[in-house]
Image (cartoon, rainbow, N blue to C red):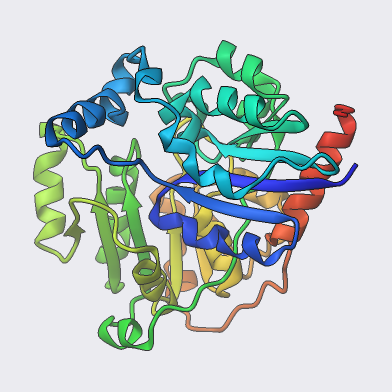
Length: 340
């Protein structure tokens, strides 16, 4: 069966890596955002109703009162009686709108398939799994542990190279190691690696956001801020982040607790031919693993400083993060479940 693919995700800085999907004739990538209300009061109520933080505590009901105006972007995708539409909905988008989006799609497109793709741990979402199983014929995750636990299909997060503006590169100082991101449950481990690197005189480019208000970490964090760590209130544009990566010799990857999967940090290291320092043990099972390019550690004492410091160029010669491989795997899954 021939499919017309539509990938839907909430507006996000990281979506820039999905834009090449639009280069495929049978694929459309849609970065959807909320439609604002004309009334300031209604807009405030809508934001509260769909608040990610609030709905993570308790899923607020009756979101359907806002109607289907959020899905007007689908008007540009007319129902096709010849080709089956396969909608790949990012789990964050589904978390935001729930069954509203799938009900709308099934009503508008009689010949369609709905798939859900988790690009973060299931435990980091506020989603009713019973509804997920009901609303989607195919559920995929980048995390193999979640796939085994919830009977999902595995799908690696695809990645495409972007080139930041030359002006951004010129403004950033070279570094030995870079870590920029949301700390989530990783702050103690991030700070312990930073201490190790600082003790050996490495030039560290560390920028952190999402830091919890924890008195036990406040003193240590203040010490590191005084030593050059930048604390952010939110994530920086992804193109700016890549500029920092390109000016560094090594990328630090610290995976989340309960996770076993590689992150975008590994994809970036392979794509931009950078060394990778990671605590992801399972990376040794990946096709691109090369001990000359990647050092795995379980505690800071195991880190070999010379690996980070040595400026010898590395090359992975690997291209399987492409969207071509992603689409082929999805096609295979659709064939396996015999959707017609």
